[in-house]
Image (cartoon, rainbow, N blue to C red; front, side, top):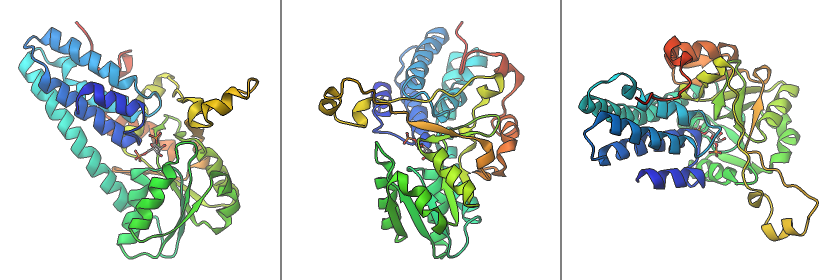
Length: 318
Ligand code: RI2
């Protein structure tokens, strides 16, 4: 898939899920680099920067996207030779995709250790990382039951319910607003994340924070499964996570909206769960309390002072 097609599919959510969009972006940079005919480093850098800009502009919230682009583009900052810059970039793109897949699988193994035989688990939206934990626990022979929310307006819960059902896991499919009602039957909540800030707040699908609040009230543990590249380094510098607001057409049909001239339909895609409501974050590098987000950013993303003083998320133009 080429750059433009990848960007379009991420924008329209044909490719969705924070991990998947990160891998798709890395792949698009790889393909774009392979297709680039130039042998001039300045021109190559310019073209790759434009590609990076396009990819990063597709969806504003999932930090996995600029993190993936940044990791792939890093060689362009330092290399002074076109060929090694290009080879290095392509190598990093392939490595990112491989490491990302491995991270999800490792999160599944680590996360399954937090699930007990007989547990009832609630999950929200469709997270590869959260599902990896549930599926691994099931594969290890644990008798578990899942509550999966619908996830209005895009209904990602349908995908989750299908995946769980196909795996042979007893699943209850519920509307989003029923989460608190059923919390008394739940032993553990596990969701994914689109971004984790330096203070341990978790940005995830709209409705996550309500579920975390209900879990807190019911003394039910709330776990987040997230690859380390979901942590947002720029939040150290005070940058805020922009919450994507999508079209009202996703919520009600345009003709219905037209019949309601005094009504504004709001459609935020994500919300923020404060660290106080998160018990643990399961990453491929181990399990962290949300208060250790800074450590993850520094030690796992290798975020250094040079990066921190740069305004540019990926590479510098000459
Ligand atoms: P994985 C999704 O966003 C959901 O919010 C999900 O919890 C999160 O990405 C992480 O998903 P969207 O693309 O990376 O559906 O764990 O808006 O698959």
